[in-house]
Length: 351
Image (tube, rainbow, N blue to C red; front, side, top):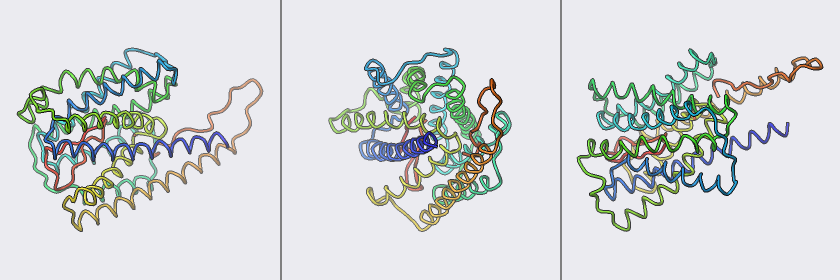
């Protein structure tokens, strides 16, 4: 029981850390990009990953966590896939309207549910599915405005959805399969994610903005915001892997939409962004969906614990039974959280 309470407290802490750090970096990056004109989102993300890796390397050297190497092919493939998914999300925003990009973000949850059902044999109850529909409906009302379609943009969005879903599912399954912590996985995969974005970022940003990141005027104010963004990104990257490892990709995506609602609210209060009754109505519906999702997940988790406690004791010499299996209904970079009034240049990325 004490172990279960510790797990719950650890999960709550991870969720809170993810929300606070993600909202903070979005506000910081919005000021950097919208106010100071630094619109090189992909390159900035590569710097985030490099700083995160350096910080973890120092932490490993100080013995704050144990470096645990495992299958190098899995690590390299996972890191490269994460980097590609971030680049595709940026391209999706570059070739689509903000409204269509938001639809791309919304499609990640049903796509993740479908992939986990087909390939991991996870089951999502009707109540969980209902709560997710309510959530997506609310976020859609609050954020989706125009839906301008084009073939290339739609194709890039499809690739971004699939790669993001697979990367987040892998984040969860790798930690369980190889029995590594979120910190250990992040430490080993960070260099490959950073390498992909560090090499492709300047070209991708130049293609999307028609400006050269190396020719930008780096004033002291711009440098200060970049440093602040990189420091916050350490917490963002760590909490992302932590949340997905302790819960699931679906829960992480639900949490991501909570961040979207909070960013919209903070943008209105702190930055005086345009806000309408449609935004308020959509956020309220989304919050209802999140509360229902949390409630139904809690009920199903309690049901599993009760069922597990009723299992017969194992015979002497047998291994301990698997008394807890993660409920499938129960997480690079929510990367862009624009509202209806945010221009395409307001790309707010984190891994």
